[in-house]
Each structure stands twice: as C-alpha cells, then as structure tokens.
Image 1 (cartoon, rainbow over the protein chains, first blue to last red):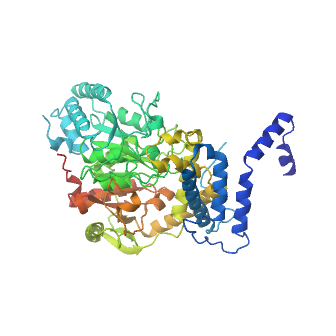
Image 2: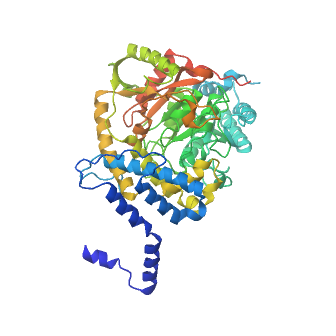
Image 3: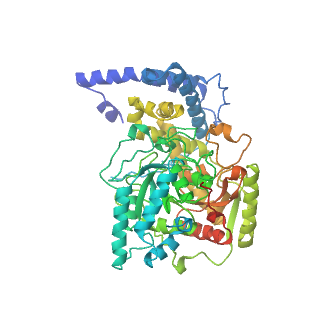
Length: 116
Length: 470
C-alpha cells in the first residue's frame, strides 16, 4: 500500500506544480468533508438522518457545499442562483443521510460489473 | 380519404389492410404526416417531421408489398421516436436548445431495428429537455414548449416522453418509442391515455440513445394497446454488441403457446398507499380495475415494498450519472440555454454528489433486487395507479398542480431494481383527463405484463377512446 501511494507522488516540477494547483482548486472540499464528519459522528451505532433544516437555515454541511459551488461555479451563477443551488445541496445532504441510514456489509459490492 | 378509424387502428389491423392491398403505405404515411403537421405543433408533440424520408420509406414498402415481400408486423406501419434517439437523416435535439442542431451519422439500434422491420419513421417527437435530468418542475421544460395531452390541451402530456405520449394518443403515429429513467414512459402513458411498456433494464439496446443514467435508462414502446406494445417490443428487443448491458433474452409476440402464463390464477399484490389518498377519480377507477382483477386473479391488498430508501437511491444515481453525462454542458455554462430556470442551475448541485454516496446507492441495488425477487416469489405482479392524479395543468408548477394528493408510487423503486411495467388507461378523471393502471412484474416478465394488460383491454374499452381534436 505504501509503495502504491508513494508511486502517486509527483516527482517532476511540472507535475508538482499541477498537483499544487489541483490542491488549491479543491481546497474547499476537505472542509466540507471534515464538517460532515463533525455533524454526523461516525461512531453512532445506528446512523439516522438528521432532522430536516428549515429552508431559511441550511445545514452547516450544505453551507460548506455551497461554498464549494461558489468557488467552482461562482463566475457562472448569480447570488440568487447560488442561493437556489444551496437549497438543492441541502437535498443532497439529506439524501446522503438517508443512504447512510441503511447499513451495508463490506461484501456488498456496487451493482455494476467491470470486466477487463 | 382515410378516416379516423384508420389513424386509430391497431398495428395488426393496419398490417392486415396493408398486406391485403386495401391500404397503401404511401397513402397511410401521407395521412399521418398531415395529422402530424396539423396537430403536432399545437400539442407540442413534434420536433422534426421527416416528410421526405418517410415517403421514401413508404414507397419502398409499397414496392415490396407489390412483390409479395412481407417483412413482419411492423412493415409499412408509420411511427415516431422520442428525439433522444440518433437518426442519420434528421437532427437529434435531446429536447434542448444547446443541442438543437446536433446531427449523428448513424441510427440508434432501436431506429435501425424498426427500419429493418419495415416501419416508417415519420418524426422525431418532443421530450422534456435532457429527459428531465436537470430536475425540472414545469411542463414547459422543453425546446418545443409544453407538451399537451390531446384530451385537454390546458394540461400536460407528461414527461419526459411527452411527444410519444401525445402523438400516439392523438393518432398522429401508429406507435412511438419513449424512454424511461424513472417514470418517463409510465407518466405520459397515463396522462395521455395510451399503453406504455417500460422493459426490463437490458431488454432493449440503448445504443444511440442520449444517456442520462447509464444504469437506469430504458427504451420502450408507447402504443394504443398492449398487443401493439408486444409487436413493437418483439422488434426492438435483444442483444446488441453496441450496448454491453443488453441481453439476449427471448421475447416473442404473439407468444408461443408454450410460454403462455400458467392456468392457475395470477397472484396480484396491490401496493399499499398507492390509491387510498389518490385523486378521487383515480381512486375510484383503480377500485373498478381491481374488481375486474379479482374476477381473474388472486388479489392481495395492502402489500408494502421491501424497505429501502428508493428515492434517495434513484436520486443519487441520476444526479451523479447525469452530472457526469452532461458535465461539459454544465461547466461550460451552456446549461443556461435550457428552457426553464431550474434546469439552468440543477446541474451545479448534481456535480457535487459525493462519490461515496453514489457508490452507496449502487451498493444498495443488489440487496434491493434480491428483496424484490423474494417479493415476486409470492406474487406474479404488483399493481397500482400509474399516477395518483390526472395530468398537471401546464401553467402551474408540479408542486402547485394537485395539492393535497399523497400516494406511494412504485415507479422509482421499480426503476431502481430494473423491473418492467406496463401502464394501461383505466378511465377518466377531472377535466376529461385519462387515468392509468400500472402492472409491475419481475425482471424479464414482459410476456406476462403484455398478456395481462391485453386481457384487461379485451374486457374494457378505455384504450379505444379517442381524444377530441377539434
């Protein structure tokens, strides 16, 4: 595993520059993930969906996703549109909660088949 | 001069007259083209009428008939296809302005199979832009404006196969091909009063069809009877090397006698919550349909679906796969060219669906399929109203259309597990609008679905009613 991950580290300057640019571009994404973990503790034995926030108060996670949307697509969206995207992202958060509420076994594979 | 009786005739009736030389395929094609030109635009049902190529195909059919060459039940039968199927001789717009000039150099496999069978392609039919993938909630979410049901043009024809539903109901084509990711055949079939068959995932090749969701998209017939659906499905079904998800499961129509359903009574499950609080006429018509079923089947009331978050699964899959399929459109900003505001921004949140959520949804599909297979060991078919209401008014958002109606629908769940369904008209509701009844079966049970729906239609005449097209 270590060897594999080390093999992915960019070695030449151009690739390092590219990796740095990518890291900067997705800076907001780890924020969203960390906030998600903060809001939904993984230690909970039976994960349950969080209560639906009111439309006036998007969840902190939706706010975080909205910030990602602002950074990635802000030049194409008005403030009003960003607000509507945020509402839609609240739906994404709730949908993710509903999915997580169903426990899966490690052996449950995605229902598609890759063949070489 | 052809009469309405011809334009609303079944495929087998038209075929018999064509083969007997009592009807010319050229005359029939001219007649349908005239109706498409007259009524198609006012129903918002048509994108491109293919007059020249259709007449060329009709003349070829006529020559073959004169030589005594008969290709099969669709030979000389005029049809239309939803404008998400590639055709080499007409634009393929996907119902969306950014693709209004899009052209392909090939036919989709379904189109090729129809043409090989001698069917005459009259038109590319209207659809909701990008098959509704961006999350529309208004009827006018289309390059061609709102599709209208011919039963009352103030009301929507349903989506996303709006044109196939309306054109078939209005006798503008003998049959049509629609597509369903989650509800896009069953809904317009119900709102337009036609018979729509959503096949098992993998039954019909998707090659050459616009991809919204690679693991949910299905193509299927929209016709004026279950028997017609059988003829069309038998033509378009089957393995296609160009679509690795397609299967070589046999489907023949009429079915060979050896594969007819067993003599024992069918075991039919009535979906709990699907009708009790539906619109009153939908409720009443459904109970009347159950009365017929109870004479012919062992009916079990109040059956619930296996407990899974179907909506979350389908929503996550459509959002993730749809965002990937249209990533360039969304990220380039050209998505702003779409018709309704919600479609112009819906893609941005879709692009942010976490990969683990998508995979979680895909991992849930296997246990869901197993649970449904268990359910179908106890029952042959599941039945529910096709929709809990009649068609929506075109001038209202979907949320405002019929407030207060609450019902469980099997549509999302059945699409998630990839099983087939057929919707048949079963009466009328408010404003003279049709209602529908859907049968859902286990994977690869289209023969049983068509047979059951055909028997229902032998006992009723809802599918023979004609809309007022003054």
